[in-house]
Image 1 (tube, helix red, strand yellow):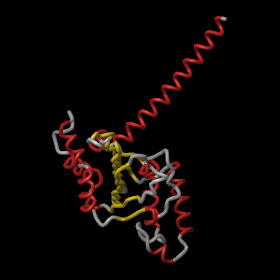
Image 2 (cartoon, rainbow, N blue to C red; image 1 turned 180 degrees about the vertical axis):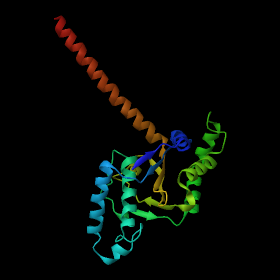
Image 3 (cartoon, rainbow, N blue to C red; image 1 turned 60 degrees about the vertical axis):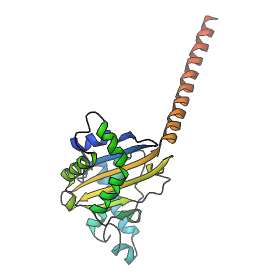
Image 4 (cartoon, rainbow, N blue to C red; image 1 turned 180 degrees about the horizontal axis):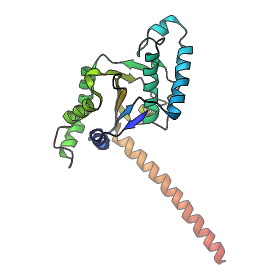
Length: 234
């Protein structure tokens, strides 16, 4: 998978890196990738395809899955692209064991747009008052940028069904979240968009705790250095 550096997406992604909307902090990830595989991705893709084919022994599991019939190479590749995208977006996690039942195919772009718009109402207000961002409404900018990057009318839309424990969506203080993959098979591109609404109290507590530990660690280093200096003076 190759990351596509698309300026309009990068601009929105930068804005969504911690938007204060009152009681919540909204954090988003908006990135596009080419499905051209190379290096480790190619090796992992081959391995995943073999495992998916071998693990889908029953006729029902082969013929029915959110990504299409798994006896077809194109369906297995779609699944692999979804898994590899998650691995790229969240490098601290390993999604290699995910299979087709961990994903959902959405009914269409329109319903997904409505849900995303509803979650970003408050963030849109912040966008309007943020210098350098508010010349065009956030949602208009968002959807025009996504459409330019991926051509929405040609996309299938998928989502990952989080277990809320072994992935970023189970982060402490998470109040709501969404994640969607816009896959354009013709362009061989995937655009991934996810947002989480995090309790500001939980976020502030986490920052305070991290700061406390860092301060204590630094204090220990200072104490150790002072003690060593005193011993040398003696």
